[in-house]
Image (cartoon, rainbow, N blue to C red; front, side, top):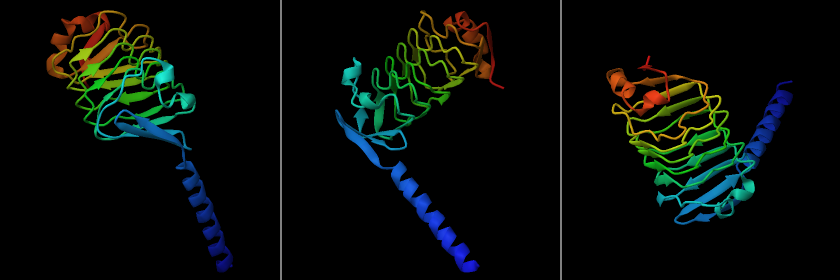
Length: 215
């Protein structure tokens, strides 16, 4: 009886190991400027290297564009300092993103039209470009870092499910005047307790009817 149970455990372990190996099988890879990328069978895109990501001004220029409808997770490894224009634009299955602390800017349309749900940008990000998270209709929560200095036009346009917005910057970053946080589901912005009045007197008050301290 014990022998059969032991053999069953070995069989289950073998099947699990095989499935795990299959999930991490690289199905495509390449280079983009000084960076390298690879896509594994579990729909995870990993980008590694040193320096800034290239800007992609058309869908044809995005190296992983053939797989944009299946990418579910993106891991940007330490060493990368910016996320390029249009990098993940239209990756409609993308729900999970890992952004390293060295990233300083997220360029125009980088995540527009994705399926991201909860996003916390790391301390270090200073600029969010135009249309960066536009039409992310499944985005529910966004936390902006204390390092943030610029949010450009349309950055959060048409995020219709957005119910939680927190900005950790003590000084209100300039907010693009055109359709930022337009058509979202939240009228409340959470900010550091000592910065509430400053935000109420800034352009953020045009996007949010209620500005209050972080609970």
